[in-house]
Image 1 (spheres, rainbow, N blue to C red):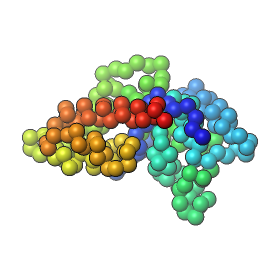
Image 2 (cartoon, rainbow, N blue to C red):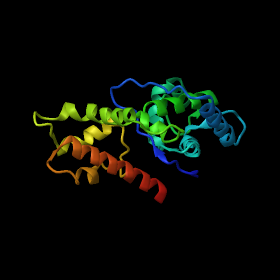
Image 3 (spheres, rainbow, N blue to C red):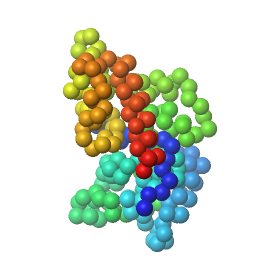
Length: 204
């Protein structure tokens, strides 16, 4: 059963980029450790990956199981041996594994995303960081006029790690685009997609 869902949607790991785990504060480590122990109903010091979305929800983040598994494959490949070499929802993690997974997921987000769950407020650096990450995904596909063909938008969203909430290749998202998409249009599109992700979570 799903637990309370978080306020902040986490993006999946960017394709082709290096992942940098966040340095968790003592307060963040304590909160994550407390949640792990609460959700360890069997008191075995192990929790299945299928429980991680629920645990993240308690920490005010949202990530679907597919996103969790993508990070788990990067972070703890040794766990694949538990399930015939395949990372699945039933693979179990220790508290230390969960803390590393949590740090990697949070550290792979634009800096402003993490601050939505911290006392710090957004600043101009956070806004620039988020925009820079989107621009890095957008610009390699742009022509000399700075425009990207509509057909490329789904590939860019996937590379940036956005959840495909309808599991149809972002079909409804791409349908909103004009034939040629500017970067400003793309910014508005990703803002709408983030809103859609949140709406799908709170509706469930």
